[in-house]
Image 1 (cartoon, rainbow, N blue to C red):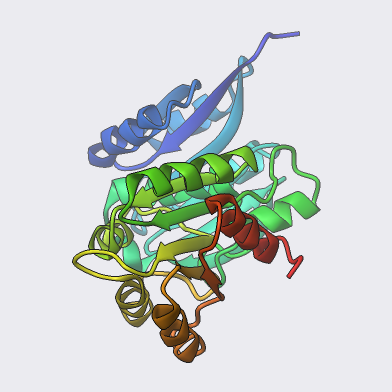
Image 2 (cartoon, one colour):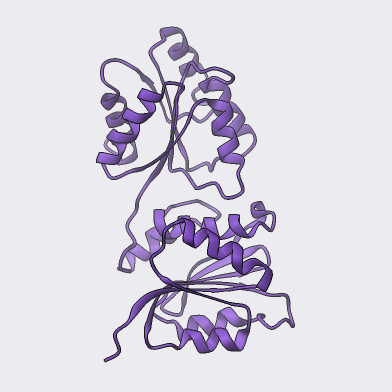
Amino acid sequence: MVDKVSGVLVVGEEGKLNEYKKELDKRGYGYITESVSDSGRALEVAKREDIHWEFCFVEEGEEGSGLSGLGEKLKTILRETPVYVISGSRINLYNDGQKVKGPYELNWFDNNPRGLIKRVLDDREDRIRLDGKLGGLGRVLRDQGHKGYQMETRILVVDDEQSIRELYSAFFGMKGYSVDSARDGVEALAMLRDPGCRFYRAILTDGEMPRLNGLGFIEEARDKGLVSKDTRIFFASSDPGLIDTANAVREALNITEVIEKSGSPSGVVNRVISCLSGRL
């Protein structure tokens, strides 16, 4: 029996391969990464018996190009490997040679290779449910019993107090959640506009912040379509006036819950987690 090492197979245009590999390296993937731009070479590498391919990412070329139709061949060879096939502005995910979900429109990538592979890696890492785009991939694979696919959640915390951000991150982290943070609404919007932005299952925002407060941030994010309709947004404040205002616009801004800050930040975190887990 051949001892195998884990690997990631990335296939695409020569000019984009370096960008794809940079993002893989940035994420700290401890895998052998094979980046190829030739169809014949890709098929040869995919058959290597000394590598267990964790997943395959293939960006097919235009009709008639050397990479056209390659995804169909790779998903047949790599039957035990999740294969993401990007063709034009669409993506399909295959597992055990069968389509799991797709196609999904990827027009928000603006042909940004780093943004494209970030989205694929986010799906791999977060097992997200993003309705209408990468919706349900993690859930479907989990239901099929595919190893390693559990529903995880990434949360964006927006608060101008560093100590509060750190406490939220610590409390969410203890519950197994991954957290990104922003100092105010302006910084949070900039993060959401980034082509490589992660999908957030939930956003927890403070009410009073400099430059752009919580309600202003939520309104802009919803109005500009920077968050999915599946993203749960939680508004937290210790100001009774802001709580009343937020409750008045809660339905209009699709705010999941308005939380009154009282006591330890752990109480706010527990409230968010209870909503996400369906206990409320």
